[in-house]
Length: 128
Image: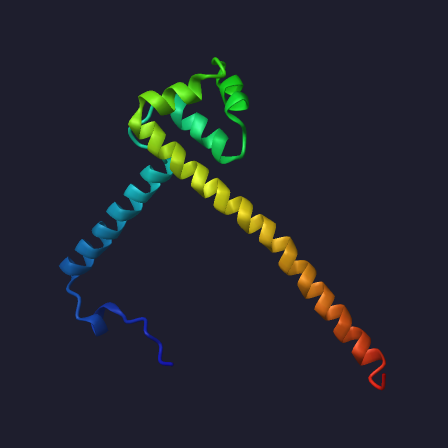
């Protein structure tokens, strides 16, 4: 496969077009960094912190305690704030996916070990 990285001259980019492309890339990168710093835009810092705790697997009660609030606050927010409710549902779905993946990984490792150990036994005694 030929090298697909082209120089400015091979691409026929003028210095102006090259500058525009670089500026566009930097804008995208800046926006990405802002999203990473604020994963749940439109929500207060307390609500964002709560979502991060829940994302890590903490219960509503543990999350509220970490925030120094009443244990019913997460439920209240989810009932009264549609943005929080949507973000909470997304976090819970992602958490469930993570749990499922973690449950599958050890199983695939055990299957791999089992098949490898059988193969090793066959190699040691190929006659039987």
